[in-house]
Amino acid sequence: MKVIPLAASAGITGFESPAADYTQLPLSLDELLIEHPSATFVGRACGDSMTGVGIFDQDLLIVDRHVKLQNQDVIVANINGEFVCKILDTDRRLLLSANQAYQPVPIMEFDQFSVEGVVIRSVRFHRLSPVLCSP
Figure (cartoon, rainbow, N blue to C red):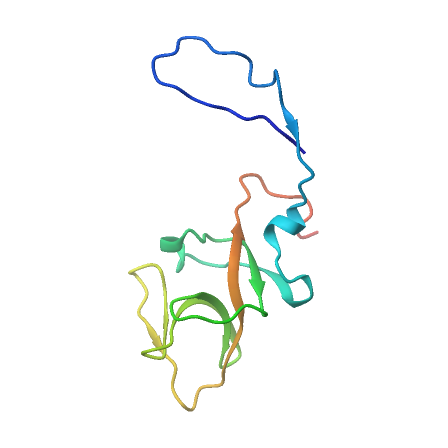
């Protein structure tokens, strides 16, 4: 991957071509996005409940099962057989949406609940990827 560094300054009417001295970096998207490869999976967001934290419908979620869960983490969980992406409030045992149109979901003692992992990154596609298109 070739990176073209750009520096902007106010009041300058002309500037040297940013391609004049580009730098080639040994950059791997796997290394950039995934910290624990053997404990990481990718899922797809569905719906608009997490838009307040920048997760939109059809975004890819990079979910790490290895990182230590913290209060207010964005997680993927299974609650009563349904996979959800929510903010976990461990103090109040709630699943929170990042959209005020949705109410918090209490985690009750009788619920079947498991945290599948912490969302460490999300990826948005501005054009549909042919790899992700269903046949």
